Length: 284
Image (cartoon, rainbow, N blue to C red):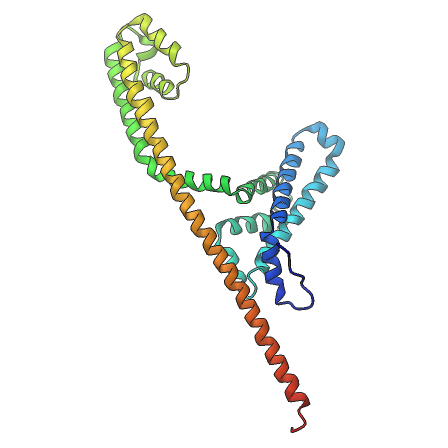
C-alpha cells in the first residue's frame, strides 16, 4: 500500500493518514515502539541500569511518547471534517487519554502516576495484535456467562466440604477439622495442586476418603471445569464474529470517507473553476 503524498491539497491529509495507519510497516513500527517502551520501562526498575544509562532510558521514553502522540494525531486527522468519530472506538479513547495525561502538568510530576501511564502504554499492544485483542474481548464476554458456572462450582464445593466435615472430622482433623480446611482440600483438587499427596494423607486416616475424593474429582474437577471451558470457547467464537463485523464496518467507513473526500475535492475544484470564469469573462 502506497501512502499518498499530501502536496498542497489539505483534503488529501485524511486519506494519507488513513493509508499510513493501515500500512503494514507502520503497524510493525508501532508494535516495535511499544516493545521498546516496555523494555525501557523494565530497565528503569534496575538501579544499576538507571545509574549507567538513566538519561538514555528517559530519552527513549520521550521518543516513544512523541511517536504515540503522532499516532493519535494522525488517527484524529484521518476522519477529516468529522474528528469526533475517532472517539467512537474504545481503544482510540484509551490511547488518547494515555497520551494527553502524559503531557498534563501535575501528573508528570507524580512519580507513581507517571509510571502507571508508562505501563498503560505497553497495554496498547492488545490493540496492535488482533489475536490478543480477540482474547481480551472473549474474556470480557465470558465473565458474565461464567458467573452461573462459578456459583454452581462454589455451591457444590461448599456442600461437598460440609459432607466431608460431617463424615471425616473425627478421624482426619487435619484435613476436615472445619469447613474451611475441607474447602481448601477441595480447591486443591479442582486446581490439580498436589492432588496425589492430599489423597494419600487423607487415606492414612480414613480409607473412605478415597471414594469421597474420586466422586468430587469426576464432577467438580472434570465436568464443571469442562463446562467453563465450553463457555470460554463460545465467547471466543462470539468475539471472533464481532471482530470480523467491526473490521468490515471500519473498512466500509474508511472507503466511504475516502469517497467523500474525493467528492469534496471535485466540488471545490468546480467551484474554483466557476469563480475564475466569473472573474475573467469578457461579457461582464
